[in-house]
Structure formats: structure tokens, C-alpha cells
Image 1 (tube, rainbow, N blue to C red):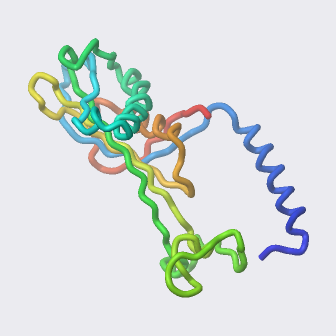
Image 2: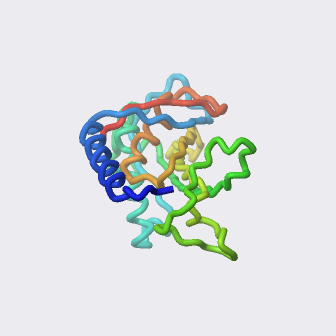
Image 3: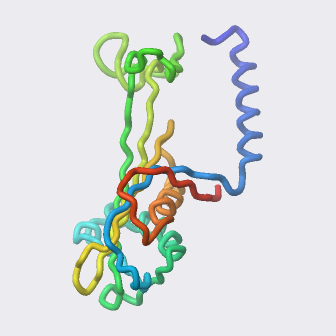
Length: 209
């Protein structure tokens, strides 16, 4: 609950946050849960790649923009794994298919019997309420909203169409995240290429703000 000195408290918090952001510029660590599948031939080099787009991702303007953002985010990870861009899709050794999603969770305090993660405020006029009654969902400050951010990469042999390597990478946080978060998630997904490990495990990578 806010005290009578709310304005002073908020000002102090804002100043501290600004200092923290100034001090956090530069490299930082991103951790993600990764699982991978496939059977990349032991004697096969990474080779060249091209992106594989569905017709809708080629002809729909908004879908094309989203796909371009994913492709830009994964290029560095592919190159660090040993791949190089092909002149065109017809000459590439592998075709790369990408996916990404953000899932929102609104757990309520009583989901956890000990309320460990409950950080609700008794009074918060900033937030509205959605749903019947005074204890509506989603914008209710009693709810600890979490975002699950995930990406997926599929590498297929262009000539045969065989799926050779598939990887999924995800993490969660209190915000949706920006497009910049896609890069470290793709880095984590391809960090162990060509090794596969279907069991979900933690991978940490370096990123730059």
C-alpha cells in the first residue's frame, strides 16, 4: 500500500531504475530451456542455408514482416553454428524453417498454497479490472502475469526434404520482451548444434543490450 510520501517514493524508484539501466549497458546472460531432435550426419559439414517461407509468409505483408524479423534474429546463430548464406534457395544445402510465440499466463495467488510469488498490491488505481465483479482477471494487480517466450528452428536437407535437426528454446519473464530477445533465444537453440538432446535442459548465452 502506498504511503503519504508516494510521490517521493516513486521519484526515488525512478531515479534508481535510470541508474540501473545506465549501469547495465553491455553484455548480459540469457538462460533458456532447450530441447533438440534429429540425426545430423556425423560427417556432414554445416554448409549453406536459405530460409523456407510459406506462401502466406511471402504474399501477406504483415506475415512477411514478422518472418523477416525472425530471419534477421537467427542469422548470427546460424553463422556461429558454421552455416553461410546461400545465393538462393535452389543452391542451398539446407532450408531453414523458423517459428516463434509468446504465451501469457495469469496465475492467481491461490494457485500456490504458500503464495510465494504473490506480489499483489491492496490498492492500485493504475490498473483496471476485466471480468465480472470487483476481482476481475488480467489487469487485477493481485495477479502475477508471466510471459513464456519461445522460438523453434528446423533444418531440412534441400535436395531430399529430410528433417535433419530441430531445436526449441524458451524462457519466461514478467514482460513480453522485445525483438532483441529473439537473438539470444535462437543462439541458445543452436548453441549445441549438431548435438541433439531431447530432454529439456538449461542453456545460457551471452547477449548485448
